[in-house]
View: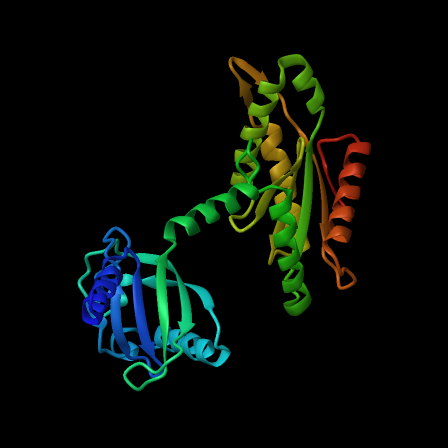
Length: 303
């Protein structure tokens, strides 16, 4: 096979690969375009050859992408990065791919030699949208209580840290509540754990209906739930806690044809200028919950 035949073979091989492969100059010109034949993942990008990225991409994205090109050339090594792109924003190519916003991974590498007299990089682009969606789903599951479908303890503490930072920087009020079902063990002992599970699921619905939409409601463990409410003065938060207690007290919790009376004790605490960590805030709310139990249950106590 002569040299030209070999070159034609290699070019045809590159054109047939499923993922797109670009040669991009240091000024943003797409010097050559190969592959990208899998239409379930990519639009046909062949028309980009000879065009500059600033001519067919929105300015912000073009600047971001060119920063990566220059970083690759300066580092003289493989540069891998991920990005989101709304495919309809790419001008001048057939919209025959998946459409909508997709996630991509670029694997960019500097060309050792000049290409048509220009410094350039190669860029292999991979559609990773399905992988990102799976990662997001797994992340959500890792943050979710499997029984009640509300956030779990891990999620709550991650976000409570962010809320504490907001208070430290901007003095945005932050209140934490812990509530615990009174005499929950006899429900499980008398009616079984399935009945207890039903009570917990129904309790979540009552809580979510009684507190502000922006409140974070999480399962703390067992029959305990923990809430954080930002931007609400303590006086109003206490009214919310009392209304929550009454809503639960008045609600008819049912298991089959059996109606179960349920009450809760609620401990409340707010953030002060002396608080530097989330554990201190939660500890005070937990102490308030203990006092509510000690004082007879079915009540709200602030510490």
